[in-house]
Length: 308
Image (cartoon, rainbow, N blue to C red; front, side):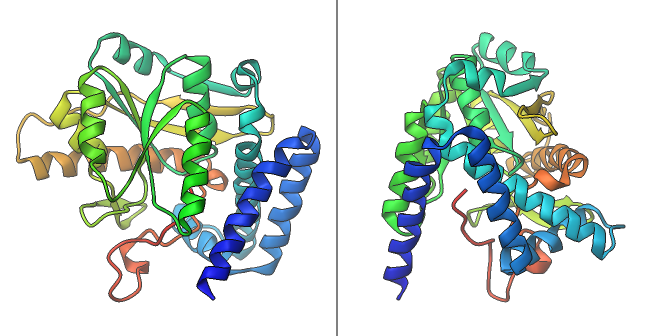
């Protein structure tokens, strides 16, 4: 049964990439809203989890407010997918016109210094579009990692898709991703990591909206070991076709403490920046999985997988 489900999942994503990118942009956007509203009305596990997560982000929100936020959140999530399916057809001009990033000098100055830069992002708005903007509008290649998905053919689709957009993609497990990322940074390169959900047993516990969550240690460890700048980035949509973003100031490596202590301090600093961005644009936070430790099922040590 799982094999049939895997094949169906792979086929649906393949259909999205092959079909949605051929639609006129307004038609694709309308399709995304329709799919989002349908999923929202069905009140499935993902929608309920999204609402539970948003209840922590907006603690004073009542049921009506949370329902409105989750509906907007599903629309934002489907906007991510509609854009992502279409990104391979976007020209450099379309990408440049579709993204506006504030304080990008933190990134460009860091790269110009030759130190290497780690960009850490949460699941806000469209990370793939931000990545394409970096490669096409700024002309800067970068390296990232991808979670291994089931079926393997779906993982291969995601890797091929992101590599076609100018990204070097490393598997999150089953290889030497950390060492390769460190080499890229020592060479003065750029590494981009989605970093608001731990996918390993080495995550760092952080305070996040008043409770404990676990986030990746990788960005902080890479900055410590290579001397690279660690720059948090937040993204959001508004009522226009443009995605907005901000590159935040560097997270400093503490001058004292053990490696674990420094990593904890840096991870908390990144989490605090993420929390500010998410609180400002909660409907654009695509967290449809368990995140806080209090929500994990007994025996679970980390949140489950996601096609993102």
